[in-house]
Image 1 (cartoon, rainbow, N blue to C red):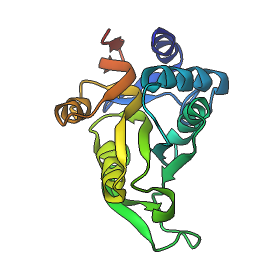
Image 2: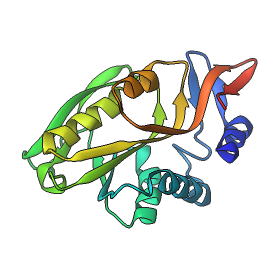
Image 3: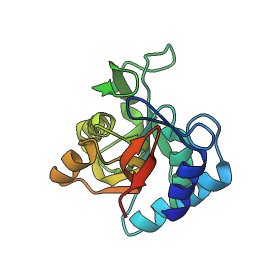
Length: 191
């Protein structure tokens, strides 16, 4: 998605350690009209699937998932990273290692919200090593639901997450695929 690549180059900041900050429009401050365009693009890519739920993980994936779900006219379900008092114990759970935070956590979805009758599209902001997506697919599998694929806003294609998922037979649609990024020389995308 050319408009996304241009926005990343214009507003994104590259930091040492392969960190890309896109807080001005994606994961801190949300450019809602632009997120609507992203949701429409995911709808275009997956429109032939009979999606019943859009699934993401808290927090940064939620606005993107919401805009995508509006296009499909289906609910958004997000995996929670923390056990809270208002979360039932009747949950699907999986362990996920966070690249960004350098730790692991339990992701949970209450069983009442995901069933074998669901056809699920996973949406997330970034794909690096793929751990979050594998965890979300595990939750879908535990429910006996069907995963039709993953829609990713920004894929760090120089990391192996996307390749591993594609080798597993998972449909991964990334709107911007970064092959190289450097604080000095900038960002290079795969066409």
